[in-house]
Length: 107
Image (tube, rainbow, N blue to C red):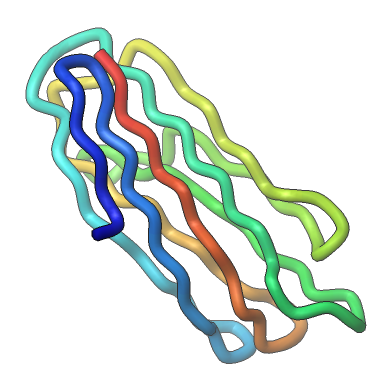
């Protein structure tokens, strides 16, 4: 559960809760050139101004980032990556958040 496979696409779905100022991450590898990475983070708990950010880091370098709040999903989308060892990082800024993540890797 949580992943689906096709020859050209891999979807990874996770959910979690973060305390204020903490970071959650999921490592992944891009084993060839020209890969696209899309990550969508949605805050599940309402109320307050729950700010989150998502960033993709490949080989120690930030390649995409976006910050948002509970009213909209935070989405990062970056093409022409790889090969590389990467990580999606989700960070909360003001309050604890419950969140859903969909990470999509494409050729």
